[in-house]
Image 1 (cartoon, rainbow over the protein chains, first blue to last red):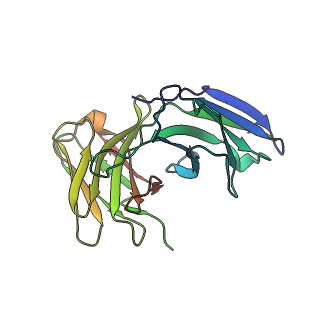
Image 2 (cartoon, rainbow over the protein chains, first blue to last red):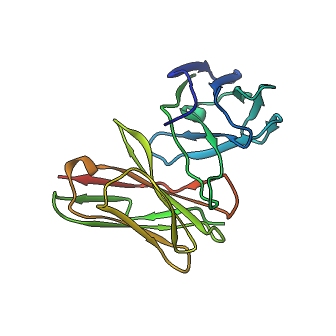
Image 3 (cartoon, one colour):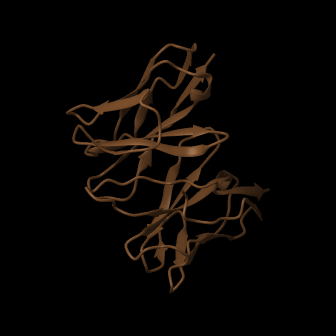
Length: 113
Length: 112
């Protein structure tokens, strides 16, 4: 079962920042926080991930709470192309080195022109 | 570097038939995972292969099977197709030891 909680949907205006929240109160010390997004008619796309510290890349920023029980994906300037379903996923490495992604419902982001 | 490729992109089958889907991972990636996406159940993990061995398996019936070849390419097979198997089947690859997976565009399977 998914171990994260996200709002079902959010709206934003083009060129404005977007903050997508995620709660993961049962996170373990070795779980990574991953964000993926899925544009219409495409496979999921990796966005960013982190463990404890805030992370930045060319797509987004990830802010992780000090207790790691929540995180926020930040899109600094939303574009129409950012309209997608965003998934927050906890990823741990199971015994034997195997990993799997457990997807929840995600947050559907609508970007208004 | 080329991304994950999946063939075919679209497939129509009838109940009772079987189907084989193919996935070519990103060069150098040895782990391949398969997922099923339906409107009702969302994205669900099917299985994961690493170095030709199945390392992890989701909660799907035995009609769903897979394999991985020595070049890391993977195939999944669904036998005795049911209407409920209509879905988008996604393949993802990752580097050994990495928690990041890279997805292909998927194969859209329709069972009539």
